Image (cartoon, rainbow, N blue to C red; front, side):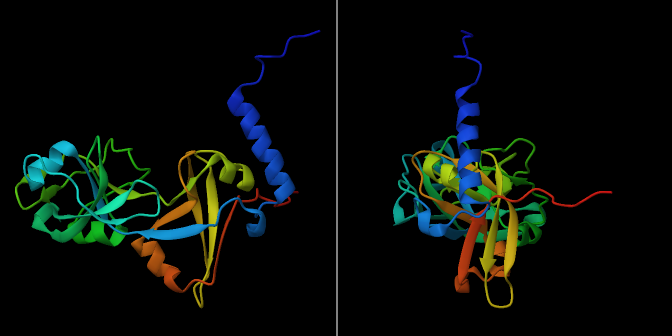
Length: 234
C-alpha cells in the first residue's frame, strides 16, 4: 500500500473542507445557518500606541484608561486622545487612542482625513507599516515624531474558524459585502478575511465608507464569496 500520510498539508486539508462547505452552502451562505451573527461596524480614525510612546505623550508610568469596551473582547476605547499633525502643520485634534498598547504605534485614518492632513497614505492591513508615511503626535505631556505608521485600514472581516468554514473562505481571502440602504445599496469588494479563533464575527469599514453606504440606516447586510467570471468567450 502506498503511504500518503504526508502528501497533503493540514492547511490544504482545511482549504478543501472550506471549499466543500462553500459549495454545499452556496456562494452566499444562509444567515439562518450561520454560527454567529454578522456585525458591521465603522472604525473611525484612531491610534494604537506603544507603551513607550504612551509615556512620552502622557507622562512616565502612564496607563491607558478604559472609556468603553469595543465589540471584540479585550479591546477598548481609551479616555486618552492626541492631536495628529501632518505636513504644513495641518492638524486633527482629539483623536481617540484604542487599547491595549501595541508593540508599534499605528495611526488609522479615512481618506478624507489624509487629504485634510496633506498626507499620501496607502491602504494596508493593520500591522503592515513598512513604507508608510509618518506624522507628529501631540499629547498633554510631550510630542512623538513618527517616521512611519500612518495607514488607511483595508476593509476587513474578523472571523473564527467556524465562520470561515461557514462562508467557505480562509485567512487572507477577499470577500464581498452587500449593504442595502435606501437609495445607496452598495457592494463593497476586497473585504480581507482575518481569521483568529478568539474573535467574534465583525466587519470593519472606515468612516468614509460607512457614510457612503448610509450604514446607520442599512436594512440588510450580506457577506459572501465572490463568484468567478461566467463570461463566455468565442
